[in-house]
Amino acid sequence: MPWLSLTLDVEEAAAEALSEALLERGAQSVSIEDADAGTAREVARFAEPSWDAPSAWNRNRVCALLALDVDVLALVVEAARAARLATTPQFSVSRVEDDDWVRRTRSQFAPLSIGGRLWIVPSWLEPPDPHAAVVRLDPGMAFGTGSHPSTRLALTFLARVLGGGERVLDYGCGSGILAIAAAKLGAVEVDAVDLDSLALNVARENARANQVVVRVSTPEALPPGDYDVVVANILANPLILLAPVLAARVRINGKLALSGILESQARDVAAAYRPAFDLAVAASVEGWVLLEGRRA
Image 1 (cartoon, rainbow, N blue to C red):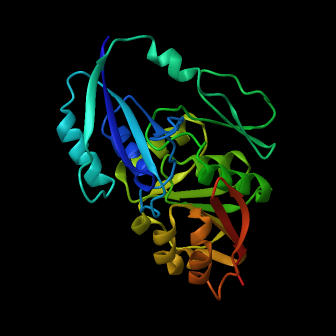
Image 2 (image 1 turned 60 degrees about the vertical axis):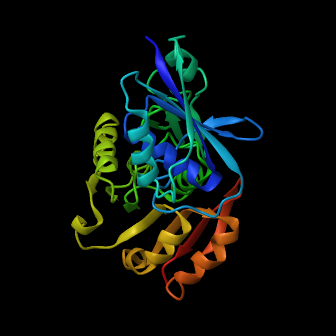
Image 3 (image 1 turned 135 degrees about the vertical axis):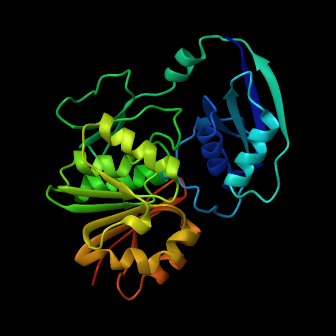
């Protein structure tokens, strides 16, 4: 079966959000490449966030595989609007024949180990460690698979701090990967919220597929209460705006972890949470950091 190959060049800061928007609107797969170096990487949100965008660094090339009957112009316009781009990016389209792209795409992905306690494993592979907690999520679906640095940081935090029996809130859940991981790691009660109705549906389906109980809702529908652990993998500006909301959800001596933050943004985000939290950089990967602190 032939397909359409869509290529767009955008600022690096907008590439993730645009990729998510394309996946949400029916793209079969999406990849991101450095427009100069041509190095491909997986598209991953799972709350790899479309809430906002950090300042641009370089140009990225977004490549998407589409069905032949897709109205490409309408798709690009809608995706650019959803990704909050100032203008609709220029794009090119070509026809590609079916060269077993599913097999070739799958060959790029392997199980992902998190903190020695947790594995993120595509559905077609077996977990390397059957005794570890396993979250099954497939690449190519909306919101990614956990390979983005900000999601890895948040997952590693959960694997490190959860000992079992905690109440956990995943704010800005995307696919629910963090909420599902928390449940797999022993959290007794897990809530996941997101503004995006598609994200909520995906999170519910993923929780069901992983046979865990996660309460999924919009922020407005979240019942009153506080949590032992609150994690938010969004981006810097929304995290600053959400500071009063998130701080109020962490119980006294509870833990807060924030990711989706560039190193240059960490100080401003941490300042927004004082004096309730003395947030500090707990880990960093590829220029992204995780801020962690305990409720005073």
